[in-house]
Structure formats: C-alpha cells, structure tokens
Length: 258
Image (cartoon, rainbow, N blue to C red; front, side, top):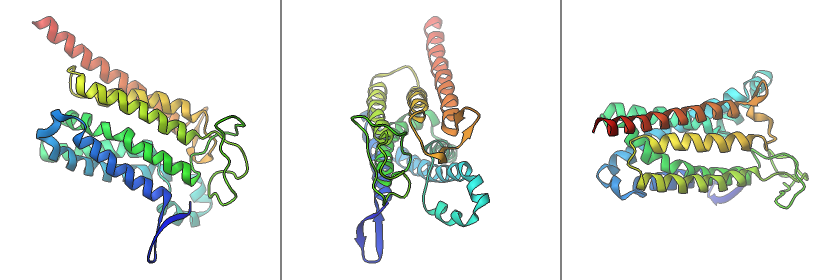
C-alpha cells in the first residue's frame, strides 16, 4: 500500500483516499438520492455522521477481534493494527448503533433515517473495495482464469506472483447491483419504513456469504466451517427476511382492516 499523494511530510495512501471518497459519496447519496427526503436532509446528514463514527469504531474493533490471536502471540503488531485494517461488518453494526443513538438523542424516526442512509452504504463500499484491491488486502483464492490478478512483490498483504481471484472487484460490482435495487425500492416503495434496510441486509448477506468462499486471506477468522463474516452474513440474511416479513404483515393487516 504505497502513498500516491505527497503534501509536504504527509503521504496519502490509496486505501485512505478511497475510504475518504467512499465516506464523501456515501453521505452525498444518502442525503440527496431521494427527492422525498428534502424536508429531513439535515437530519440525514447529521445522522450519517453519527453512523460514520460508529462505523469506524465498529470496523476497527471487529478487525482487532479477528486477529486477536496474532496480537496475543506478537503484541508488537498492535501498533500496525491501530493504523490499518477494518472489517466491513463491524462497521455496519457500529454504524447502525451510531445512527440509532442520533435518532434517540434528537427524537427522529430511526427507520426513516436508516432507509436513507442505507442507500449510501453500497456506494461507500464500492470505493472501500477498490481500496482493498489497490492495497492487496481481502484477496482471493488462487485462480488462473481470465480475470486473474497478480500482485507484485511490493504488496504488503496479497501473496506476490500468484494469479488470484480479484474478489474485491467482484464485490464492488455486486455493490453496484445492490445500490440500483435499493434506489428503485426507495423511490417507488410505499410498503413501510425499514424496507430498504431489510432488503440491504438480505442482499448483502447473500452476496458476502458467497464472496467469502472465494477469499483466501487468513485475517477473516474462522469458527468451525464458516468465516466470521459468513456467520454474520447468516444473521444478516435472517434479520433481513424477518424485517421484510414484519413490514408485509403490517401492510396486510392494514388492508384487511379497511
């Protein structure tokens, strides 16, 4: 992960730059993607900031948990760990907590905020995965096919000189698909608040569970036959389905009461 911009003594790395771009465009999409949200755009913006802070904290905490054994064996790597590495699911959980705290503090509807902010998640994640690709982290299994990528010896994470699945690019493309689905759903749906959030948890959970089967980095952490992220994906899928069923059941109850 080499610096690409030098400003005096400061070096901006590819991973950092894509992360900042992801935050910027993610919040921009969350605030302005749906014209119906115009009356509450200020709340969406500030709630997004709360979610961002919670997301950064959650992503770092889960990353440390996944490599805790390595830290115990060699405490010196903790310094490097604090300045690099994030786990998206930790960020997602932390972001939800941060956003919820904002809605409690300022007494605004959590699910209305969640539906708008969720639109920005796949957009930010696209930039994040491009950063992973540039840095060589979250790399894929050995694969000698048409889309294979070979990292140079300077790579700090991915094994050098071996054709690998560009799984980071796969996930970035999948996030484009998720964003399009969520945007259409947000603008057209009248089924109830929370539907965008539940749909995202379902779609991303499915995609991430599969992407994990193509990954090769040991930092993911494993529990029995699944990686840490696959277990969280299962929970995400179940949560998404449960939330969607709840919304649809409320719609049916309203129709029957008419």
